[in-house]
Every structure is written in C-alpha cells, then in structure tokens.
Length: 477
Image (cartoon, rainbow, N blue to C red; front, side, top):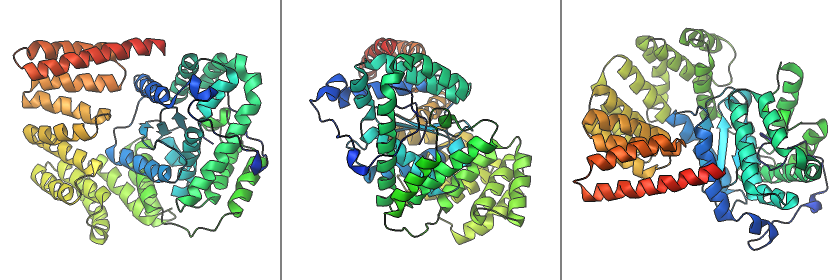
C-alpha cells in the first residue's frame, strides 16, 4: 500500500496468487539474514532516521505524535513483528504517504490524515507497512539481488526525502536511478512482497479488532485519486493500484469475521488538527469548521474541536472557549480538550490557570506525553523556567529519541541559566537530526565549561566519541 520505497527494488502493483504460495520467512543464520542481520537492520535504521530528519520537516505536535505512536503500538501487538519497538516519525507534509524502513522505522506524512476517511482506513496503511517489516522484505530483497545494503539505503533515503520535499516525480527519478539495474530481476519478487504485505496487513487489522474491509476501501480511494486528482498520492507513482488488487483485498476481507463499526472520533480529532494547519489562514479554517457545524461533517465533536483550534490561532480566545465548553462539559478529562483549554488560557496570558489545569491533568495521567509537553510549554511561556526544566529533564530520560523534547529542553536550560545543559541538550537534538558537526561543536563547548565537574565532563567526552563514530558510519550511508 504505502510508498513503495521501502524495498530494495522499485515497487510495482501486486498480482494475486493463491494463499498457499507465500514465501517462507528467513531465519537467523540463513543466507538473507547473513547479508543483513536484525541487529544490523536496527543500526542502519537509526542511522537512516537521523539522515532523514536532517533533510525533512517533521512535526513537533506532541498530541499527533502520541496518537500515531499509540496506533502503531496497538497494531504491532497483533502483527507477526518480532521486535515491536518502533521509531515513529511524523512528516509535516500534506502529501499522502507512509513508509517503513528496516530497523523498525515507520514514517507517516500528515497528508495521510487528509486522505484516509476514518481510523480503520488510516490503520490499514500502517498495518501494511508493519507487514513489510515483519516479513523482512528488505533482507529478502537483498538476497534476491545479492546486493549490498548501503547503496540501497542511500537510494531509499534520497527517494523519500524528495517525495517529502520536491514531490513524487523527483523521488521516483532518484529511486529509479538507484535501482534501475536490479529492476528486471526484482519485478516479480516485489509483486510477491506486495501481495504478502496485503495479506499480512489485512490479517493484522482484523486481529486488532478493526474492519478488514478498510484495506479495500483505502485501495479504492487511491484508485479514485489517479482519476480525479491532478497528481496522484506519492506512493501511487511506484505503487499502482488495480481493480484486481482491490477485488483481492475485498475477497480476503469477506472471508473474515465481520467487525462492528467502531467510533473513529479520536482519529477525527487528530484529523481536525491537520486540517486546521492545512488551511491558508486561521480565519479560513474558522469559516470552514463553522460551515461544517451548520451542515455536513464526519464527526460533530471533531468539527467543533477544529473550530476551537482555528479560533485560538486566529486570536479569538473568548469565542474559542465558547465553542469548546460543550466538549469540556461532556468530557472534562479528555487530553485534547484540556490542552485546547490551556491554549486558550495562554492566549489570554492567564499562565496561572494554564499551568494549574495541566498540572492536575498530568497528575491524573503521568505517562501522557502530550500533557507533559503541554505543561512544560505552559511553564516556559509563563517564565517558570526552572519548573519547565525539571519536567523536561525527567521527560528527556523517558523519550531520549524525541527531538522535540531536546529542543525545548535546550531553550529552557538557556533561560534557566544552565549553559552546560544548553550545549548538552542541543547536541542531543542535533544528533537525532543527523547534524553531527553542530552536535560536536556543542559538546566541545560543554566539555570546556564543565572542566570542574568531573562526572558531567566524562559524560560529554564519551558522548563526543559516540558522535564521531556515528559520523563515520553516516558517511557509509
């Protein structure tokens, strides 16, 4: 389903085959795992993600990040994926795309929310990507090509970066240049990969209690895009969807037990966040959601929530509170609504109310990433830098691989007067974004300033050695 850039060869549309013709998974110690072990995949995946982040705009929306992470976590539990630890990157781009990279990296463009009409359709894309990972199509495609890993990953990086920036045509050109020599030999194997990913993805969707029919519905959405859109979604340029593939997906789903329709409100709330940001101005977003509340909408709560966000962004906090109140009355403990209420407080410069509201919410839900980041941000805007610093220092230990946490922590350290902390946090931010020169620069400054603090000095020196190794490995990629 998704990008078609996951695999070592160019992807093509799947052809249907009988279910008994599935390829057996490689085991550790066989030829394909000899070419690229799971440990090596993880190492390459981390390296790849740093390089990708260095070139592509990613979302810092904590609530959205949390939703995508939780969605993948649920699906992963029901997938054949052995290592269910995933690195999730949300790309700030209105194009419809998603991808998976060896080592457990899954990426989602924000445009996927604009395209998938409900949560199950959205999940069908994610389940398909997890299937590529669980079936180790990457390692198996290397075995089919007898090719090295590094040029393949470099080609994948270039293609996905271009798809997320310059657009699909450039991305496909980059991928084709990298993979042209292997295309003829890879064609049939790629079809088998896609058919297998369709099957495993639909099975995962059903096991997770979601509608297996959503995969076929999503395929139909894609096919419509090729007919009615000026330019089709990114992954369709390498991932043609045919009537036969839709029929196969529907036939497979029809053999499964029917699933009752689920409430997709949480999905629609997240979709509203994307839709507000996609409008040219907050004022235009206000008009759109007002019209939806008066007429047809996918979910009334989500339309109201979108209106609240748009009104807040448009500098109309009083109107936003009036719009939000019915949602708060109905569900006062909902994290999205609490954060929206706190944003209204912040827009009114009522920092005390915002921080108190969020402190209570975090006390009731101490593991909620979005609420923690909301509280830290409220303290930051209120000038309570030491309070924000305490929260973020603790949170950075829980989410060491989250660039948004390190970015805000660096800013907070600076305003709290911890200059060594600034350099350490900025170094971690740049490491996660693959900007190693700047990371080393900050580590050197930190080491110089921490010369009288033996423990901190030793930690920073060791981190500098780590970054030098990362930099050397990145050159291979």
